[in-house]
Length: 271
Image 1 (cartoon, rainbow, N blue to C red):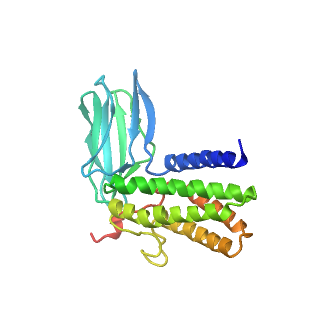
Image 2 (cartoon, rainbow, N blue to C red):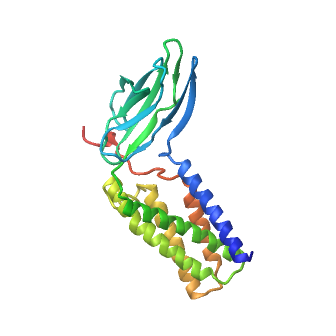
Image 3 (spheres, rainbow, N blue to C red):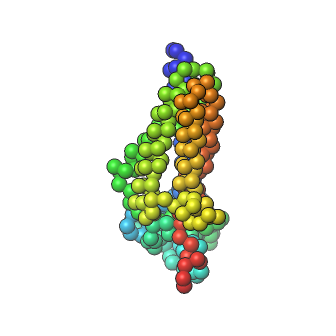
């Protein structure tokens, strides 16, 4: 197996690991677990994002009918009082519904289970769910694919620099193009469908408000790659710029997905 193939395999493994880490550590990844109440074991999944047009359903199996649940919720960043409702037992499941919110609206909620003797909360802190608009697959899938390819080629470029290969400029060009189309073209389209605005990063909310981190981190990574591409075009020996850009994009990927994303602050709206 030649060195080029080995470096591509290493880049693919590295990229897959980075993508998995980013997705599973973000604030929209569901909280999963299980609790023991008396003789019953309840496995649960608490969702933290929802893109449907209706209320968000939270449900988990409870076929015995012995366990009762209390669902407590209020809008996130609001002056609302907590609302408490019993969970419904439907077809062997305990079910609760989070009231639908406009795109970027959030609700914080708690679930408490009891068998009449024992009581347990499914989370120590309120779980926050963010609502979003539906993003069509013909927009979302190319966005995800191109962002993955951008990270893959960025990683491969970094390995090429370290290995002192001859393809640094070519891989840098592919990385920049993928990042441009996937991040700065399709990214805002996804944002528009999901949250009603093409760009919510700096400086759209004011010079001292950095806004949506997802938009900002994409822009920062692209700027570094654009500079690296220009420096390589001027002088192919300046491969270190590509390595710096690859490290920046990797650090960007290490920021959990949707961290500090778009949200509605009801406390800042007219009452």
